Image (spheres, helix red, strand yellow):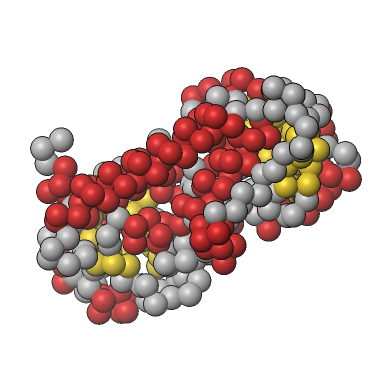
Length: 331
């Protein structure tokens, strides 16, 4: 790879992961079971009018079922389609590439995760816009001043996925399908954990996730990717770092000697594992690491493991197959 400004990587990670490092809010939501999407006391059978509180603490009144929805986060776009609200959408960002139906929507360009043309958004005449993250807070405030209904939900963890699904499904009139999706995600995660558990007797595989190679960056335990590694029974070799995506030294990595190395690839880009392995072998000292010696290098589609959304189970399964391939040999 060519040398790259690490600040751009952090911007892309913010957009793809829909947030930065892990949050206390996520843990509190998980422990208390609180749901921030609340309805008005009187509703007609359609579920509207409704009042929904978002992660800014703002209560947004929704008079009727929205039919011109715009999503400014790929993870929210995937949730909308997963719960059956895709037909209500009129726009999404240029980063929203799943499912295939997103190609039929008007694409709104983001010059950075928190910067978008207000004129382009208003021209779509949206009756509801979904966004999220501190980096889109100013945008949310600007749209609110224009009296455009905005709901902001952050997805920084697996617990936050449930939280976001509830808020989005409640505000779009798909409560039942939202709850069905939440149950399925929980069941599928539990099934994956049960599947690999018999193979954990030898201890947890030590894992290094390479976000970027120049400079060398990884996913810490406070990141969404780091949570997935832990959730499926892997030991992050940089579990002691506090920030989500830290820059690390090659010397430290070699000393920590991972058993497995995971790397992302962008869909449609190069996916040559053999070439990547040759590159790693050529790095001074890398061929001495267990992961390289045993050829345990795995490349996973980035969107599956960086977007806290409905496809979290697919991403988790890819990690599980890399860490415990024997558990899937008879599949």
